[in-house]
Amino acid sequence: MAAVKVFCPAISTASIRVILCLEEVGAEYERVNIDMATGEHKSPAHVAKNPFGQVPAFQDGDLVLFESRAIGRYVLRKFKSSDVDLLHGSSLEESAMVDVWLEVEAQQYDKAISPIFYQAVIIPRFYGGTTDEKVVEENLVKLAKVLDVYEARLSHTKYLAGDFFSFADLSHYPVTHFSIKIPQVAALFDARPHVKAWWESLESRPASKKVTAGLPQLS
Ligand code: GS8
Image (cartoon, rainbow, N blue to C red; front, side, top):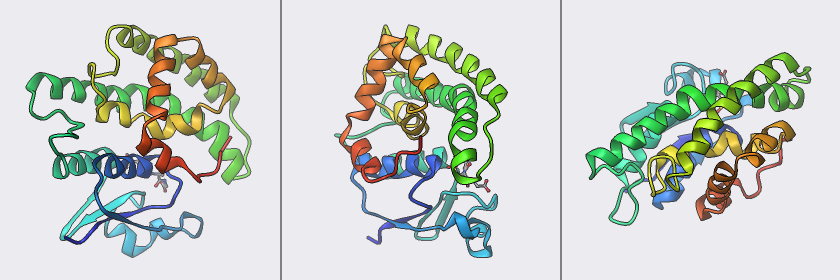
């Protein structure tokens, strides 16, 4: 069976989400580099795969996908086994809880933490610009409220969807891996012991370590 392909640069939070899924299920894959510095993600060849001119794009034979969370679901369904089913598809209730916390990740968590990451890390490091501290401050307040909900949830269950690791947890990993180095973000995690323990358990997963080994520290 030909390996599936992920079209992305080494560093991209959405793309790392897909690569992590592939590593967790032990699938064979090929990462085809997209050089964002030269605008390759806007090239006709890439836009044919991702019409928004973003990374990642994904190909499995004739099937071409974009949107990292949708690609992740596909990978986890296609390569699921009796050992690894990060969507918990065999249980209606558990898979519903995975869906709930995946939505929370996309609609609440990511919307608070990504602007902090973008302002505090991406703008100064990759665009030579100046961080908008007001945006950072506003989103730190939002992130603190989201993490209060997580702290309450994680004081009852080991992971977000229940006492099992799932795609909902994994989906948080990429942007958090880079953003936790920002002191104000680290302080929010440090102040919430269940969130902190949850984060440490995500960081200690072999797939997380493998995927982020060798990536530069961004902040
Ligand atoms: C977001 C992709 C995205 O923002 C997904 O796949 O989850 N909802 C989409 N990709 C960024 C890189 S960060 O990982 C990107 O391609 N930025 C360049 C651009 O928008 O031009």
